[in-house]
Image (tube, rainbow, N blue to C red; front, side, top):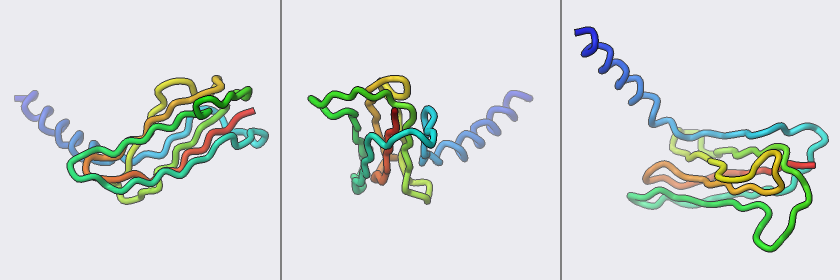
Length: 119
């Protein structure tokens, strides 16, 4: 009987927390001496019955980067819990490149500002 009471409560908590997927993220350290290496505003309208995705590659193909990334900020501009989230797939702080994937919630769009800092 104890298990049947705990499991439904856990599922209720998971159900209440899971829909809140809009997240702003910061990776690394952005000091006062860091320079803004790249900034990008990403805006995509919703797509019915789909996720909206966008990939940010820094530096862009064919352009070298001699600077080391110290920090990255991905600001979700949506404040009503329908925004998306950002994930670093390769590189990032400590490297001279980064690949970031932005993904919306199902049936919603993306509004992000991504800033990459380095020295």
